[in-house]
Length: 162
Image (cartoon, rainbow, N blue to C red):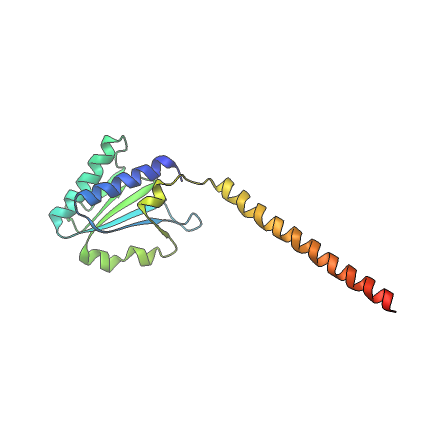
C-alpha cells in the first residue's frame, strides 16, 4: 500500500484515540474481494456527542494534513458515522450499531492490522513475488538433484550385483 495512505490511516487512528474512541480496529481489505477501498478503520463511541466528536477530530486532523473527506454520512443521527477518504473509510459506531452491523464478521476475509503494521515500510508486491519465487526454486533444485542421484547409485549397485 501507498505510504501516504498508511500515514493517513495512522492519523485517523490517533484522532480516534484522542477522543477516547473504543475498540479501534483496522481492516486491510483483500484486493481480490469486491472491496471498494483499501482499509476500514472502525471504532466505537459511548454516546452521540462522543461519536460526533470522534468524527470531527478525524475530519479536522486529516483536512489539516491536506486530505479532505470525500463524503460523510450519518453525522446528524450519530449512530454510525461513515467518513469516506476513497482509499480508506472510517466507521464510528454506537455500541449497539457496531454489534448489529458487525463489519469485522461481514468482511472476515480482511486482514486485521495494527498501527505498528502501518508504520512499517510497505513491501512492494514485486518484492513479495520475487521472494516467494526465489526460495522455493532453491529448495526444488536441491530436491531434484538429491532425488536424481539416489536412483543412479541404486541402479549402479544393482548392475554390479547381477
